[in-house]
Image (cartoon, one colour):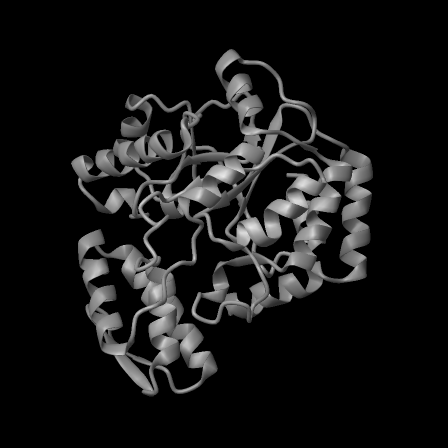
Length: 329
């Protein structure tokens, strides 16, 4: 029922009537002061461009992204991370209609499709980097490894450690099983989850690496104006590992950026938004000024809680009218 309702809602969001409704709201509400909307993207690419990568990570096609950035450049005030840090630190104001654009995980298609569109429109962007992956072509994110393993197997079912047998009988069953596997892995202790991923990939084939930007490419982007910020080293859910491991992940990511790029801003994005009170305290104690979750919504600015900032995830099912509507909240 929930899935049908969600599909119906996204269908409505693509209609001309909904777009006209949003235009009316925009005319009435205008650019609200004292708020910051943070957009989160992961990949900008064509669905069939990288068949070994999980297509659910694609936030927009290059064409869709150009439409979205055209709107942002014309109708919103896109601010850079430096401006956000300054406002949060001093209690200063951001301009009405302020939007921060962020990308997680530093996939290579950011440099191919996203950054050229942003640069052409003079829009600042922050790229959160999981720093254990650049220059390590044998490494891949676990969700891409699982997707590749399931895509490569000819079996009608597979067994996942801790979950049991899941069906791969048809395309719909594969998609449902991928969602079940992801939910199961996110709910398990980190090391158990990664052990299950390793076992599954050894039996069915591992994803090809090299999907993320290397350090030379990241340095070039930084020189061109992209803000690079810590996103841990290996992208674990920080509330599923020990405090000592979490400290190493957060500090290591910042240190990697400082070594390779020369600097790292005092901001952090929790992988998959996973955090709890202990993780928040750790990030604060390590000297960060801001930290970003994946909880949807707008942020009052200056923020009451700078370590639980909300972001709006952009996905392929997010038509421009729906994105515009979310920026009115």
